[in-house]
Amino acid sequence: MSPLAFAAAAAMGNVIGALAVVRHLRRGLRLIDACLAFGAGFMLAVTVLGVLPEVLKDSPGAALYVLLGYFAVHLAQHVFTSHFHFGEETHRLSPAAGNSALLGLTLHTFFDGVAIASGFLVSGQLGILLFLAVLLHKLPEGVTIASVMVAGGQSRARAIGAAAILGGATVLGVLLTEQIGPLARHGLALSGGVTLYVAASNLVPEFQAKRGWLSGLAFVGGAVGFFLTELLLEGWLR
Image (cartoon, rainbow, N blue to C red):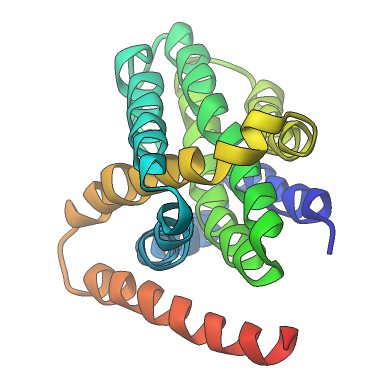
């Protein structure tokens, strides 16, 4: 199983999400929006039950790298970026907002690739679980960057191009993790912090703002989905 192939497949999620925006596929956007809460639950379960026990098992000091990853994505998305939130942007923005959102998301998507590569360095099972966690939020991520670009007056082609850049950053994350020793050693902890932030601080507030109980149920369903997927993978990879 090649981590690079999984990263390329995940990267396509960015482009698909962007296409849903520029082609005004309302049904597709609603489906992606529904996946947001499920993805948050799945990501949170993978991080807490899969990644953190692994990185802390032999090195309690790895918790520092988890914290660094968490803070790094916060700085990239909410300090150095003028306007950012997950989901479709519906308000008019300045062109600079799209560019800053792209820069902020690029760091995050780079560590998506680091997560996939680092997971496969531990086991095929963890690698696939992290790939699925990444894939589930790639679709709303593509919606986010494309809608911010369009809201800032950018063309549809630029919106899709921005999504492709995010996908490329994920592939780059895999390539560099396989080549750079410190990233291979600490990448799982760093990306664990990034994934924890995206799940708990990006995605959860987005669906908590919505009325109704379906999002909450989907959130729990994402965690249940993690357990079921883990069981299936244990039987498949045995």
